[in-house]
Image (cartoon, rainbow, N blue to C red; front, side, top):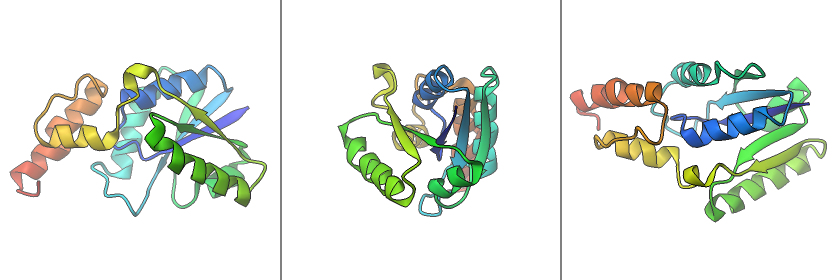
Length: 166
């Protein structure tokens, strides 16, 4: 059985990787789907986020990557996939994720949402918090893989700090 794990992955965190690893042990194939959400202002371009996820999943033979615009329900329908994986870090995530899952179910009752919780050591991680720490020059090495940390330090934030944008 195939499953889709959608998200913005901006940036990819150890919490995301924990869910990818665990999902890959449950499902025959996991497709990590990087979304282009016009309501969010990502740090990394869609192409850079895809590149970073590709590096992260290279050791998982049954995990691949794709991208999408629009509704995830349309993506899974088009690919004939019936499972959407969503991460729940804390109670604060539950209400939004629950509403989204029920809305998706109303739009297509054949598609199931599976909630997975990351290891408790990652339950507090959020991409937003990591971006804030990185933008202020903080150490994010315990939250993201080294290649993501490098991109945060030497890529986006250092360039925009030099240009006075942040």
